[in-house]
Image (cartoon, rainbow, N blue to C red; front, side, top):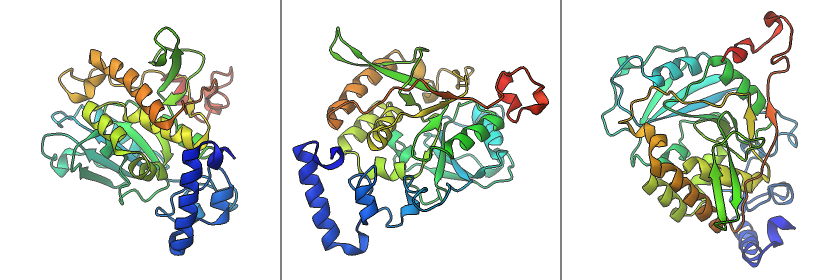
Length: 335
């Protein structure tokens, strides 16, 4: 009932979509898409008519999510040193047994680096130059992304191969959610009567930032084609909040929180030069902008879709008093 009849707007939209399906039968939703969560309004037939192309129907098909991911690294800083975080990150991700390919989205104002500047890897590395070089371009539905799973990364993210592998194995059990490392939370500020955003370490969280997270590639299509231009333009003008908006979208669709893995809290390269755009976290306006984004996004959705969770997933023998040799993800305890 909530999916279609919770507001006059949804009733009208549902009616229009049903009419559209009857007119354009070659790209219409089937009965399962309409009758199973998340419902027909979030399952866009222009994306695909095959259930297996969406993250919601694996169990209905008796299938499991494919076992490979595409990493998309968002690059905004010129490549001037072979010790830069992006190169270390690229090598670590490429060593993952689940990595199919790596895409570097070059949103830097400087020209593309020569091919020999990138490290040699056993998986393909594709460098795409962003046409508009705006924040929302990191969530475009690129044809180069051929796997269901996307590992979204900021250029200065610090992750080991073991951490990548563990996050991906967790994501296989939750293909419709965002799974990753950096957790954040929202709260209601009763004194200001508005939503607030916090990065404090608390007993719960409601967002996993896309600087180090895995999710289904369908959310790139939904972000690009479902969300209004006004929200995406806000993100692009601020060069901020794209990760918050993606969390709003996925939680609005799934009605579920994201999933944080391991105790890791610091996921950024602290040595990044303060002159780069990647150091936007150090900008005092950055945090204030994120508060504004929270309220603008909630206003468009008509409610607060983010959901708090107190669950964190660690490897089974994590911190257990057994031989380190018995632990599959032994490196995680040292990080």
